[in-house]
Image 1 (cartoon, one colour):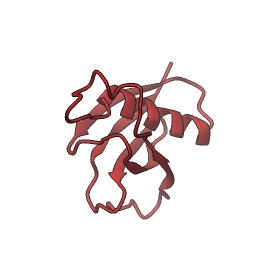
Image 2 (cartoon, one colour; image 1 turned 90 degrees about the vertical axis):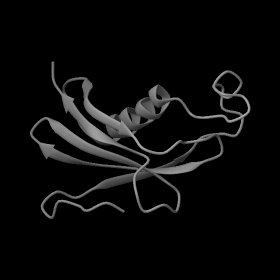
Image 3 (tube, one colour; image 1 turned 60 degrees about the horizontal axis):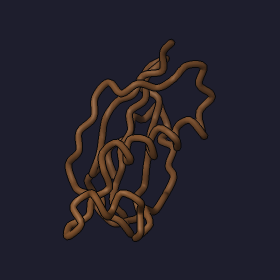
Image 4 (tube, one colour; image 1 turned 60 degrees about the vertical axis):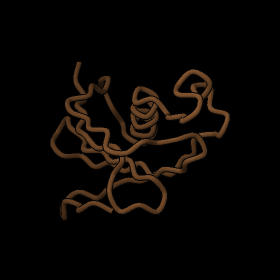
Length: 108
C-alpha cells in the first residue's frame, strides 16, 4: 500500500459493503457503485472510533480514483499529519493503489 511517513504509524481497518447495500437500486442499477458520500462516511466513522477527537472532522481534500461496488471489501487507513489533520486512503482488497485518498481536519 501507499508510502507511510516514518514518524507516524498508519492505523487500518477492513470493512465490506454488502451486496444488497441500500444505495444499489438507485445508484446505477446495471452498474452499481457505492456513492462517494457513503465512502466518506465510512472513512470518517472508522477514524472517529479509533481517535480521541475533540472536534468534528471536515474534509479538506478528497480524490476518488476507482469505483467501489457492493460486495467489495476495502481497507481504510489513516495517520495523523499535523496536530489537527489526518491523511486517509481507502484500498480495494488486493489492489496496490488507493481508490480514495484525501485529508481531513478536526476543528471546532
